[in-house]
Length: 189
Image (cartoon, rainbow, N blue to C red; front, side):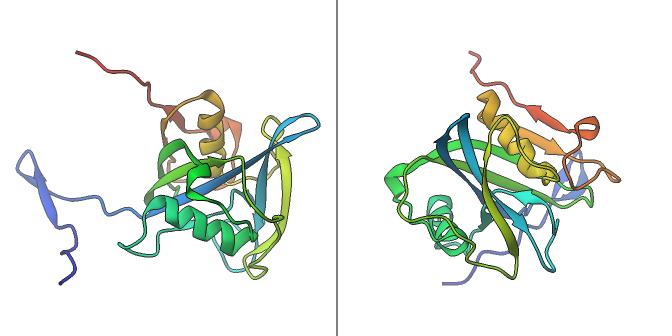
């Protein structure tokens, strides 16, 4: 069996346009009840990676066409934090269509998990130098803006959000340059 062809140009009003071919990533909202309310596990990126020194949810990309987003989430959780998650404990939280300040776009699936086995720990020290629990209403800084957009959308109850940053926007979340737009739910006849 041959692999499907890469997306080619389509047309829009007779003008050739390139079709989207964004990466798909998964984000783990590992949640627990803390003394002051709900908390989420965050890791601090380190080394020669995008947004080094910034807080982010444990996350990653799909490993190929054989892996669905839930399988990818369970694998990434095990690889990055050591926790084992059962498929039945994964809940859809929010989907975010994101564009970075550099123009690269991606689609992120954020999943909430309240039950798991094992204690979270840093399993990839070359790309993560910190891991801790933070209250959902008191997130640390600096935090990757894309991750913060997903957490803010989740906190608002949205199921779908857009986060299209502009050239020159910071990679770290900054209230004055927040580009989060929630997509309303509902249907129309």
